[in-house]
Amino acid sequence: MLLPINIEDLLNHRKVESNRIEYKKGWNPVSIYHTICAFANDFDNLGGGYILVGVEEENGVAKRPVEGLLTSQLDKIQRDILQYNQLIEPFYAPRISVEEVDGQNVLAIWVPSGVNRPYTAPSDVTSKVKKPVFYIRYGTSSVEAKGEQLDELRDMANRVPFDDRGNSEIKLSDISPLLVKDYLMKVDSKLQNEDLVNNLEDVLEQMDLLEGPVEKRCIKNVAAMMFCEHPEKFFRTTQVDIVIFPDGRENNPDNIVELPTIKGSVPTMIRDTMSYLRTNVIKEQIKKQFDDEHSIRYFNYPYQALEEAVVNALYHRNYNEREPVEITIEPNRISILNHGGPDRSIPLEEVRKAQTLRCRKYRNRRLGEFLKELELTEGRATGIPTIQKKLKDNGSSPAIIETDENRAYFLIDIPCHPDFVKGSLSNVVSQVELDKNEQLKQNLFQVVSQVVSQVKGADFELILRTFLALQEEMAISRLMNVLKQSNRTRFRKTCLNILIDTNLATPTIPDKPNSSKQRYVLTKSGRQLIEDSKTK
Image (tube, rainbow, N blue to C red; front, side, top):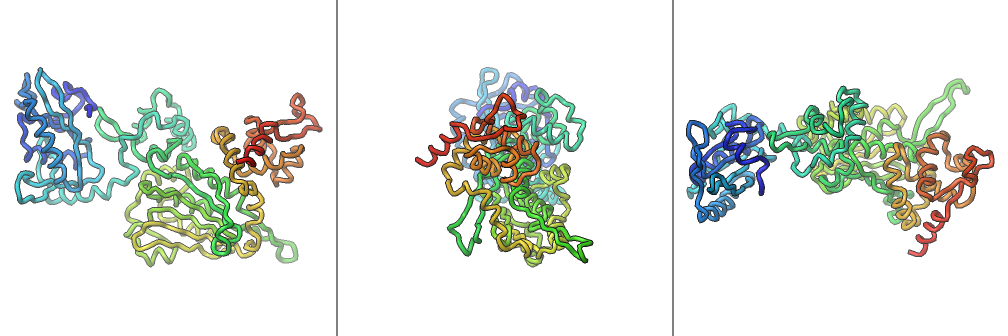
């Protein structure tokens, strides 16, 4: 592989500090693997280091012209490296590159900070008896970590959550300046005034979203979680799946409605998930009390309880797991499942009590900080108490939490208010009637998805129902009445205009948009979409 920096910069101590470079006149695997282990442990968080084999040192400076290595030595050295890498625990493989310097071969070994530190290496990789030792850099030397240094090194595994680690696969082009801008504006940061198109890397640096040495900066995982339009490129199956069992999973498992997958950055997934639940699931009732002088307002599911559960699922999810966050809607409950259960520091009996889960270690601490800035979470073990309080205030039963001994998953069941249980899904099912024709649903989603993704608050399920309704001409007032919509401006922007922009629907009097006789109906393309679906 190629070095992320010019070899001359290493030989002349340009851009890289001297304590991150070590010169070796010849191949000495014992001392070299002490240094590889020390650089991988990166005790001072400097970004690892470089070892140049074939370069003699004189008073801390590379002696020129370099000694170099014979071509015949290179194959054996590289075979040795493959063998000795297996002796590092946990496994670690440095990057190697053969460079030409002063007409000679130099073996450059690049050792980035390891993501699974701390590491041990044998005190002598060539010995039959291999004693594992923790090595760290002390100035320009590699030494054994002892006492407080060893305690601190061991604790590093607990101090670097997954989301705060650099990821060399994430490129600057993967980060959306628009999403960064949107976040900075919402939190009212002064960085919102920066030129994010031309200075995105500088802004990410100021937001502490980069790590590693100056010549090879890595973008942290949390940056992709927050500001990448397609984080599933790096964290497989990062999505929310919503599944409806109109008759209940146990009563009729064959009657199932699967909604389009929700993808995007974590804030986008939270927003779109809650938009669907708020529009299509959450219902309100008002009961008169005390001779009609007072009334009680309550819901089948309090919005704050659902929001807290959705945010927690995406916040505490294990982004290494290839499993989605799954929301299952039944007549009597909503279940939210995420893979990556509560930390083992929380006793299992406390999880089952479903009251307060106090955790000493967070899987995605930085992600929680960003969500807190957006006022989506407090990040102080208040999620479960908030859910239970909102349910109690609503007159609902408490939520139930489930996990397993291995803490592989976290499942929360949020009960429906008893007054809504009978037929609580009838309205939801009618709103997704189109799902009975899966092919039509897929075809429609394919046509409108690009426009939907660009419209804030767009509701695909509402678009589906509107598309069905427009098989006959309808005035907007009648259309909104059928679809139980009250905000005309919002309905136009997030639904009707999308169908018009994608040439699936059209006004009957296009040159007089405000005519009292204006109606809307499917276009020829819209009707053809239906016919095409019937033939597949």
